[in-house]
Image (cartoon, rainbow, N blue to C red):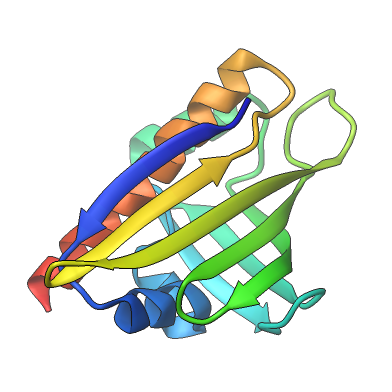
Length: 155
């Protein structure tokens, strides 16, 4: 069963779409707290690829990564499934960063709809291989949406 995160943010669906689908937008809010995101490739079409590097920059995150034997910077890849501007975006993330676990793909579906002066975001997150990693992912995605909400509120 999917985990669902819902949030309403103070920006139009087209602005949220832009922040979710451009290198500048993604770099501005995508990284979890204590990390930086640098987009190196973005081909926004079904089957297209997003490649970015996420780097731990805060002491707490650096310590966590080192404790679990994970590199401080990891390149991540996603492949777009649905690209329906400005209402639906889905992508399969390549999960290749879990120690002692085979690489696999994981689906995220994002639905955007106008709500009042803002946008309702509904994010469906496929579970990862176990509850601990699924909870980490859910916390990370929740933090991303907090970052997005703060970014558009400040604009």
